[in-house]
Length: 415
Image 1 (tube, rainbow, N blue to C red):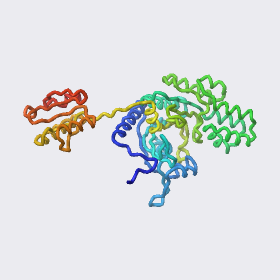
Image 2 (spheres, helix red, strand yellow; image 1 turned 180 degrees about the vertical axis):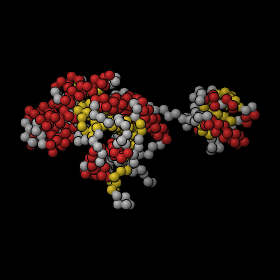
Image 3 (cartoon, one colour; image 1 turned 120 degrees about the vertical axis):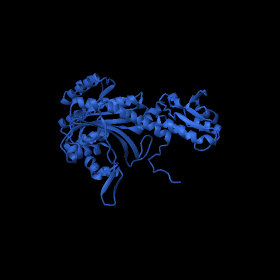
Image 4 (cartoon, rainbow, N blue to C red; image 1 turned 180 degrees about the horizontal axis):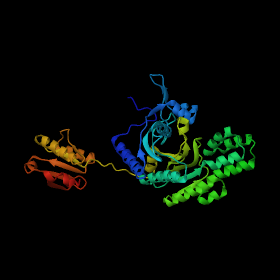
């Protein structure tokens, strides 16, 4: 038996109903913030991701040559394609541009709980300016999405990459070592970071101060220990977030995100229920368009790991109830099947989700099937009732039933 490829999944109807329901919650929240949906190709020129992340990215993604000998890759993330799209066709649009997207991405890595080779991201990009209002808008959107999904336990951690960059510059760390150190600090790999810093001639006291900053977590008061422009910016950002009723975010100066295209604020959201692999959202302010041939434009964006946040909701005990159809039409005998087809068509024309027995079951088995598919009501079509232009409607949860005239049938469903 042929199986789906390792690291991918089939989504059966019940699961797809659940996923679409939560996708649409995210879409609706994005629209209330004035964001508009976009889509980019699932595969891109491989050069796009190499330009953004370096040649080593080819070891982590699905890269291949097509029949025209072009180097292509399945997208491993969506920020680079969105910025490429901006450079190609939206650079002259009025700003800010508020864009959101949902789609699958692909990475060749070891599958584990909540981590797949084909995974789904819901994200947003706000293209136009580098200021505290832009950053606050992105963070507030991410928080609103997480709340709208119903996740109860989560943590929002906000940092500023400029604080550590400034400290490392003052310590005279060579520029070519900067990104490597930031990546080590982002992953809390202090021993590796200390080796690099020490080899660059940076003293133990300075290294300790740098490490202490990465462990600094709290409210606005923790910014008092840092006196540069980045700290002042963060204070302004937190004031705006408070005005927007985002009061559950904390400052974490150790949030670095480890990617060299970030230019300022960075943030992450995590769900404790996921254990060690608890991150469900990440983003920050960045500049990428100049790498792809466009003008330098500052943006703020984030991506929510859709699979991971659904897993976190499951671990919190959140249960999704599949809706089922409003009506299941059951013809009692073969001689009323034609009329039953007219009735199910009439219900659908009035916006009522309706199904009909097409397996020619006996009534008892047809009613059992109606229950199995979660129908709210069974519409029983019998010859005697039809002579009076009526049908019998049974409430599948209570078992109560009543006779309803055909011309008022759709109204009885409250549609």
